[in-house]
Image (tube, rainbow, N blue to C red; front, top):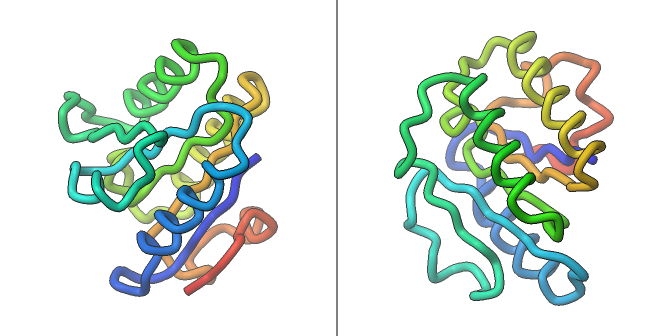
Length: 141
């Protein structure tokens, strides 16, 4: 399953994502992973949530990012949710709606195979996204 949190930069997507992850861990049966572009939010997350600082890894493209996600999902079969903050920056992709849609579809397939939900913040307004993704938007700020 894919959930998108959309909106321009500075609208509060990260705070919403952090709150949702912290709320989710209270009732989680499995593990929760939060992937961020830096370790800044380490102390904002419950200590049971695994924070991964993606800047520590040499990711250069969207395809490498998908491989990175596959590696995370493959190493821990108990992952229930993966939170992706600042998706465009993490995935090294542009705001091109077709490219965004392609990578979100790839994450959706990974989620189906590994039984993992992805909760993604993306710095784009709803109207900038491909209409095929509208049903995945949880909140648009």
